[in-house]
Figure 1 (tube, helix red, strand yellow):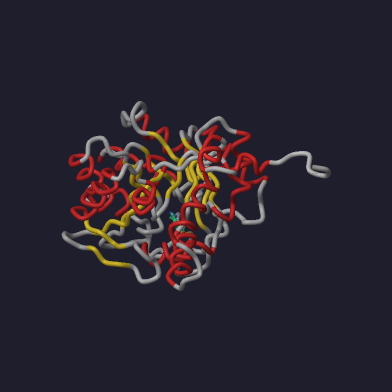
Figure 2 (spheres, rainbow, N blue to C red):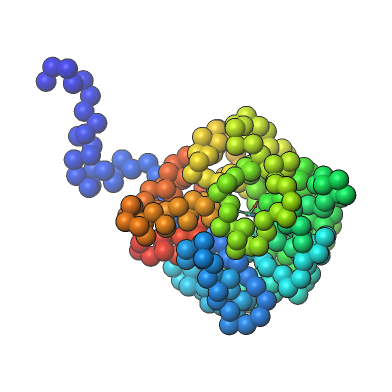
Length: 325
Ligand code: PBG
């Protein structure tokens, strides 16, 4: 037929042909479920701005981790809300705090489960910043590093497979690696660094859930400017050089170009975080009839994988595993 040299539609004609040429696949094992753990027992308290997400006590977290594991989900990522906050965030490295307690409980109930723990101070500080705050409001970088390292060691002792620093202080991967090595975790605890983390408006539901909105100022002196793609690569490659085992881009959906460019430049695995605002946007749109939740969620995750992410943190992990089954 004149005028048509190539007919890509020939390979789209049947489900069998489409499946043969499909380039990207989504599997529950590539998804990690984030959870918010609180002190106490038998607690499951929903967060209004965050559909499908709740604060859970350790015992409930174990039950949810079991459900995730049974569904084939690749792992859990634990965030903790402490009983008390202070200027230093000292509950972060308390061996009896919710993340540590829950890590031990999941490790005991589900020895094979992959457990990743978030290392940051913002859930633990009364000012809500990810590092120590100086009298003039500056976020102190180097003075924060030992506190992050101490937190990571406490998580390692509880049984975490990987610690995930999300604070965006310079040099924290090297500081954490050195502390883990000194404390005997050189061979068994990895670092999944939030290596490229943007100062994003898409974290709001998380901050409601984690009660970690800064009391004053914002996070733009440590999280990255959404305008910067080259700096995004610089940030991630620095963390690789400092000893990170996995690099992460966060948020995911609005930053697929960053994932794709990073994938060309590193041989480390790349993770991506479909953050709370991305999750809530899909859920609220679907609840109002604007989107098909299943199709839109699967498409959003497939696109993140296609861009180059090996695995994805998503609050929809268990639902997605069910849809894929
Ligand atoms: C803590 C942290 C945040 C997220 C993960 N770790 C919030 C922030 O930086 O304000 C966001 C995750 C999400 O929105 O789902 N530093």
